[in-house]
Length: 213
Image 1 (spheres, one colour):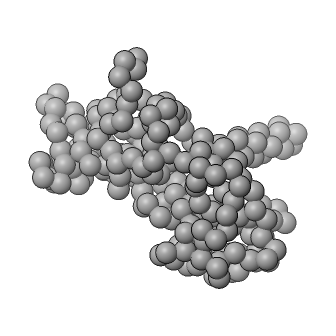
Image 2 (cartoon, one colour):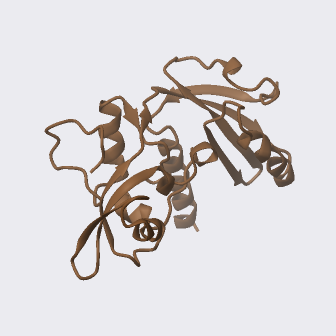
């Protein structure tokens, strides 16, 4: 189960729940998940068994880094609560442990305040080397960046970075003054989560090209 869940939600959120349901429920309660992967229909327990990396990992690490406590079903059916204080070795190896310690049934996880809008700055790169040189700037402490995505497509090498807020318009003073380039494109959109539609469109285009031969 996840804390901050509204009373009366049915069915209850468990390790078998999908991240999409978790995020919807958290958003309704004014909270959000610190890190989400691109694909939201994976189970909570399954993703935590491999680590979980997403656009917010540039600031918040992996999904496993947000877990404070978990209930582990071992192979003999025994259920144990694990945390840094209780059964710490099981806690350590259950997260990103590929299921070798057992099944993650429930978790208590860190959340953060929900921000309605994602502000995204899009930077075109001339080369992969140019993108790699920009990465330390995007990941630097205190620069205001909370999410980063880089992608390489035919004739297009792009970094997308930015921050969340409850304001509909981007305010670039939220970012370090040296970070934003004059030619970078800025746009804002709803945050649930903002990259899902873009990924869906990309996979659809790839599928069409494959089917077309």
